[in-house]
Every structure is written in C-alpha cells, then in structure tokens.
Length: 155
Image (cartoon, rainbow, N blue to C red; front, side):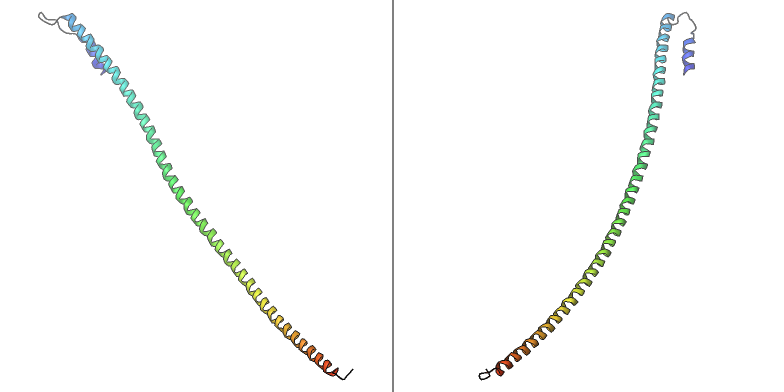
C-alpha cells in the first residue's frame, strides 16, 4: 500500500488544452493523499490493536486452559480424598466393631464368671443354712433332752 501512496504522490498528469484545472486536480490529489495517509495510519493502528488483542486472547486462552486443567485435577484429587476418607472410615468402623466385639466377649466372660460365683455362693449358703439348721436341730434336740432329763422330779 505504501508503494501505491508514493505512486499517487508522484504521479503527474499530462496537460491538455481542454483538460482539468491543474490547481484543482493537485488540491484534490493532496486531499486524497491526506485521506489515504490517515486511512493507512488507522489501518496500521487497528492492525497493532488486533495483534495486541490476539496476544491477549492467547494469554486468556492459556489461563482458561490452565484453569480447566486445575479444575480437572482438583476434581480428581477431591474424588481421591473422598475415596481415601471412605476407606479410612471403613477401617475405623471395622476396628471399632472388633474392639466392641472384644469388649462384649470380656463382659460376657465376666458375667459368666460372676454367675458361676453367685451360683457357688448360693450353694454354699444353702449348705451353710442346711448345716446351721442341722446344728440348730441337734441343739434343740439336746435342749429337749436336757429339759426332759431335768424334768419335774430331777432337782
């Protein structure tokens, strides 16, 4: 386009007898040259702006791509963390169930032992009561014997 502008500025017209007014043509060519020059500056400026916008767009596209990758990675990490937490929770629950089972067994054994001890104590009590009753009956028999022996005429 620069060559065209230069050509326009340097172009000369042949003069003819009934031709156009040279001053008017020169003036009009200067106006056209000025307008073309302004349009060329505007075009150059728009091209620079366009390149800047394209560069900025590429930057935003890279940022968007990075954000997309980060989002995907974050989702993947969140899923992994969730699965790990579930596994840990399952392990904690399993351990708690095992511990509870052990404690129940210990308590059942203690209850069983105490039940046996209570049953043993009950047997002992019954034996003691039987022995005490037997002793009391013997003592009562002995007392009756002495009462009868000391009877009404023995003193």
